[in-house]
Amino acid sequence: MSHLAGLHDAILVKENHAALVGGVGAAARRALAAAPPGVLVEVECATLDELAEAIDAGVPRLLLDNMSPDELRRAVELVAKRAELEASGGITLETVRTAAESGVDYICVGGITHSAPALDVSLLVEPL
Picture 1 (cartoon, rainbow, N blue to C red):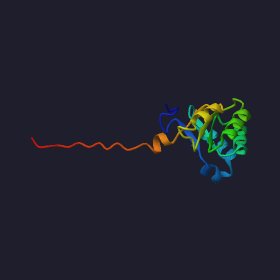
Picture 2: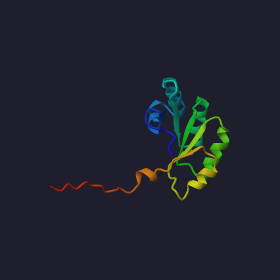
Picture 3: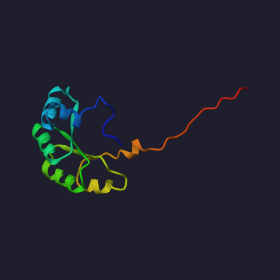
Picture 4: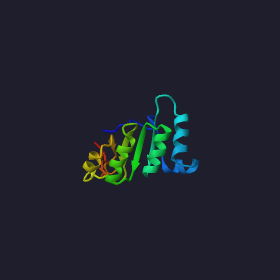
């Protein structure tokens, strides 16, 4: 089950956004200031240093990108429930348990959508 219904539910600050404004902390602060009431801000963090910047900015949800199981556990410890954590990147159905055992709040398994097999559906119409 998805924790978001559509693009209107949240602002997701990705690495390119952070690069354009001088880092994760700056991007996080700008997104938080611009977010309409009730719109969640989530910031992608690829390192524990970026995670610390986002936490210092007051981000309520962090996307932990391509972190190892040890990094995920450390992130959970560092955040200490000050924000929700979503593990993403490189997680498969075979490794999802390990990610879950780290203590994160959400897990994104991209293969469920980007590698799902296509279903060939067609409608054949024959004259009466």
